[in-house]
Image 1 (tube, helix red, strand yellow):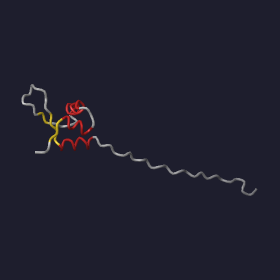
Image 2: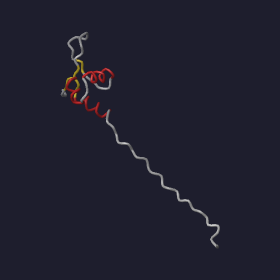
Image 3: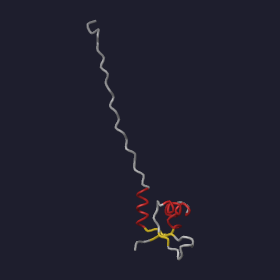
Image 4: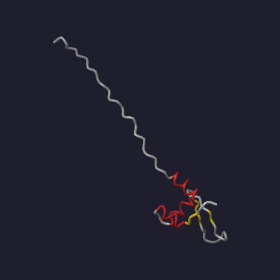
Length: 84
């Protein structure tokens, strides 16, 4: 079985409040196991390291791709008075 972490430990790892981690779990963004002894009790969530890795990948920020700069158009002017 993979290593598991509790909600407070995950909160400390990400630097957020435990309530935020519970919100992620309830929203389905973070997968967790509810190991409460009875279904009507307060949930006891445990998060596997594999779930943490997939959560990190889903939240990963990719660098912006810079658009290619357009080349400047050279304006050619016709010299009508070249003989002067």
